[in-house]
Length: 152
Ligand code: GDP
Ligand code: MG
Image (cartoon, rainbow, N blue to C red; front, side, top):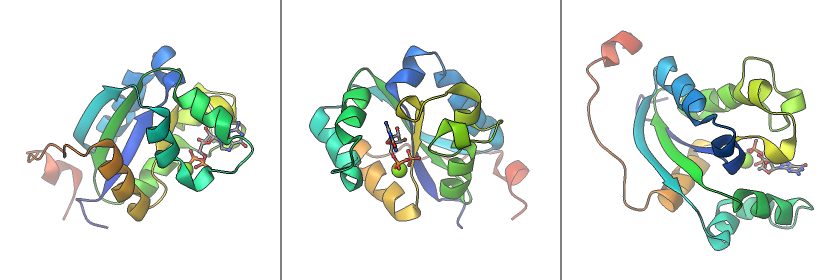
């Protein structure tokens, strides 16, 4: 659980269209995590199929790729202690109807096929996703507030 743990968070096309980008960034930023990469992208279907390769063959796969290819996404890498697991908690359950109020999905969406955001589900998948979405690398810098976020 290093302070340098990183997760890949993405605002999906519906989140962009519905103007939830700032809200999602704000939640990670004000929690105390460090933003180390951020960009908009219109990914190709091939790129999306790679990102979701574990779900290939599921009945909703074609619809998922259509949805994700329907507009721009906002790609981010957030860094901090236990950020993969905590980020998943902040997103809420995959199905918005099962997401607690107070989570991003619990607060901002209704349908599993329009659930506004993505977050890596494990440290290993985070590393794969970061390499896939940010082959150019991340932004390295020190934040002077680190001792205000972490005791040690
Ligand atoms: P996540 O890690 O919480 O995003 O969930 P998964 O990795 O299981 O699924 C990836 C994405 O596929 C989800 O965020 C949903 O957008 C979509 N998805 C998952 N399950 C379903 C489903 O049963 N129906 C539909 N339409 N989409 C689904
Ligand atoms: Mg997933």
